[in-house]
Image: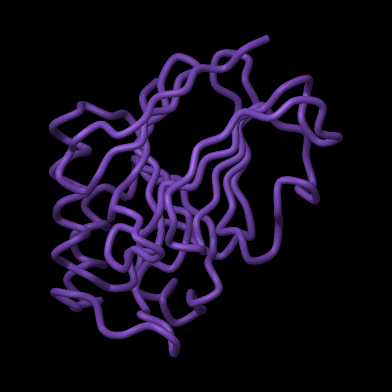
Length: 187
């Protein structure tokens, strides 16, 4: 399976449309949303193309392909307009024997995730990052930690972007689909 992972859309229809275009162009099977989907949050400026209603309409067309978790800016009222569940603090699934833990990042860090994992995905900081770690208590043996960054409001000179996971490999992209970094799982 091929997963496009993104975070922190914050109601930007412009960014959401680019993510969906990349999802289709890269022929992904699932779209993983790491929270902060509709609301821009009290500390952020309005992102380009801010239109939460259109974001909801666009994502609802892909509801059968979405795996999502709740961000710190997501609320029950957001769930009322979305056709897929977003209120869980994390999503956990297994792909080809690898355990994948997805969360927004405001409640669980790699050190205190509630389940053992091989891959840990989180957003929240709006800064892209990809690192391989060894010997963490919650990882199996080794683990890869990935933050796909924000699709709409990147911070700290990070690119607006997303990640793609396929065959035990993670690729970081900028929002226009330019591959920035690749890392594969090592036993």
